[in-house]
Amino acid sequence: MTTNNDFDRTRTSGMGGTSGPSGLPAEELKDRAVEKAEELKDRAVEKAEELKDRASQAGQQAYERIDSAMTATGERMTDLAETVRQKAPGGQAGEVAHNAARVLEQSGTYLQRADPGKVRNDLERVIRDHPIEALAIGLGVGFLLGKSMSSRRNRYG
Image 1 (cartoon, helix red, strand yellow):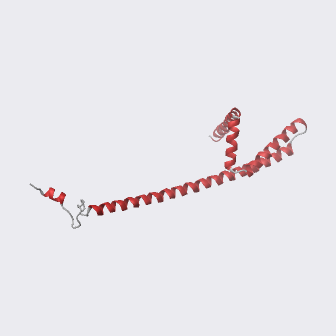
Image 2 (tube, rainbow, N blue to C red):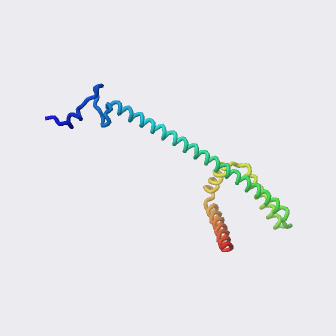
Image 3 (cartoon, rainbow, N blue to C red):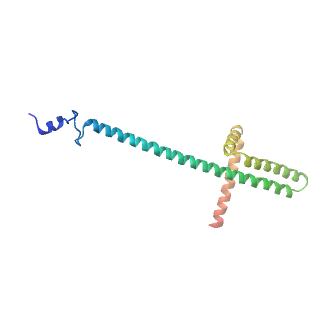
């Protein structure tokens, strides 16, 4: 015996296909689902491109800020080198001061002219070639920064 539910499940549309829950032919439902999936895929691709562009812009801005900071630091280093030369005492201490000024000036010029990628590569190479010295310098700089920060905290409470 056939019930109404059995009849509804086996009912066919005028085009010969079975009907879905919305009463539309199954083939049309399938086509709509495919269209919707393609639409969602296109939106996802657009969003991914938008995010990629934003990340690229942020990276470029960071690169420019780093380059600008390197140039400014290099300029300060060359200025400091000139100050050291002018105030250097005579004798052996003066010779040490002039050598320090020469190194400061060379380093400042390097920072002014080099791009951040080259500096990073050079720094990586130096650290690989001299790991113990790099670690000692890093610890020293960290100690000095820590002291500087703690004295500021104590001063401004």
